[in-house]
Length: 297
Image 1 (spheres, rainbow, N blue to C red):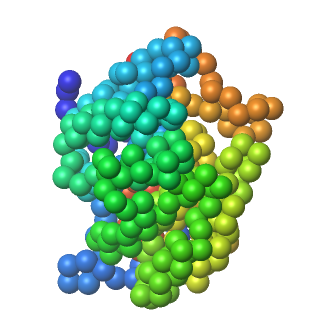
Image 2 (tube, rainbow, N blue to C red; image 1 turned 120 degrees about the vertical axis):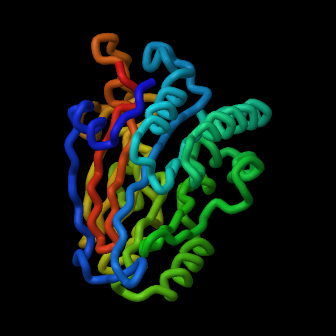
């Protein structure tokens, strides 16, 4: 496969970018000699490895490897990659669940990026509260990390089938935020939306508003999530919420169908509605989002 220059790839893909600003750009100064450092990362979501409905995705075993190949051939490598949940398709069989998690882990190991972050979706964790997931991806379902002046917070709103964050996790979040200044840029990574996008379709977190309330005093907050399998942008106060595409199958966007539905495969436009996201981040709180196709037709 030819190596893609990232800018040329975006141009060839016919994709523009959407710029979102959280807080006041330039209000915080981080990085070498106090200067902000721009960088970019990739968000991959809802892989559903093990899914096998050919009417929805006849290339169910090929889409992830093709997306990995696309990522590996970007000329400008991302600083890191994050998978925002539903790494595998749910199953009641504990042995099969572990087989799928192992297969996904081994495939993802082919990404030529030094740092990859993972966390669980409800398909990975809700049936056993994350027990199998943690055997393959570490003991923690929530964690934080810092990168070039931005504080990243991974929240678990899937291992409890309620689905909730829970009092213990909210206390953990409160304690973490207490260490930060109000102008600290924050990115929250989670699987389900924190706000009640559409609870009838399980597009909500029952106590997500409590997390939003804790984040509200901070001027620079953006939330990136998956779960709904299509691009969506929402704002609670000054906090931006951005949903990503799926790598396995698209779902009907809210308001376009009476019921949540997996959209059928269209041979005339293969891989349409499947993709991943490039996020160009500035420590000042500005994010340029570009959704890239999962594979070339």
